[in-house]
Length: 369
Image (cartoon, rainbow, N blue to C red; front, top):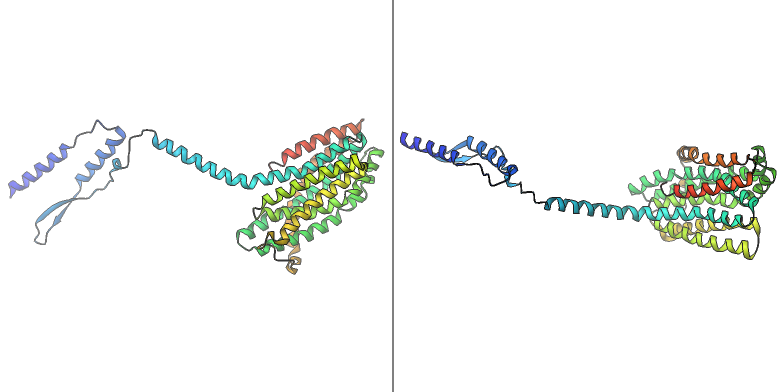
């Protein structure tokens, strides 16, 4: 009996010493394997039979054999990871540009209509270009920043409703925004009606102020179009329908170029004709978006006009006003610069040059906003 025990101990000892360092494997492989095997052999459970005799030694590993999962680094894993990462970046980029690309295109085409208008006005004379520049940059731009900021409230509300699958609320929010924006347009209407006296009060040259006041009167239709266009754009963007906005903007741009050429060169309507082309183009864009939204393009989110739109107007107004003020503080800075250049000696050329620079810079700025 004792002889058997001593023999078993010697066998166990020999088995322990039998494990040699596998120097042929990399260090990162044989070190975890060696440690795992040593710890496993230190702890054994004697499996007992019903009679109390030892049947076998059952090993209880306290440390997993790390070497089983460690493979020699031959560069294939890194290549596979690089390919997987590149594929994920490609997929995410496609999804992102599928949404962002049409949005960028629509904003560039929309504001390019102002640039085209200035280009046609420049063929009439320096005074006409200065009048168009002040009316589009200062008068229209003043309330454009406010209305654009107020419409930004729909980005939050419509996005939350669409994510919560309360689709009918998007149409309600759209109608509330129309009500608030229309009231705001009426309150800002004196800015167009009394543009000439306001510009004279701010020190602008008399001739340029009077011509700008005339152009501003013709800009009133575009003033009201902004109150409908901006909410419609946010309404469709929250549903990822940016492609529709892009196509409608392209259609409006083509109409604007054709009508501008006809009014300036064929019919020779002069400065008033140039202002009228902006009204036509922007209302074409509004009617295009409106027809798509309410004529079957958005069956889940547009369920018809609702009296629910007249409730909660005060809370909606507070959110819209806060968004409008934040954007106006940034937007009005450039408008003030154009007004200040009107006090220089050669005011017409100064206003022309700065307005051209501003629209070029502003169009580039719309890529990121």
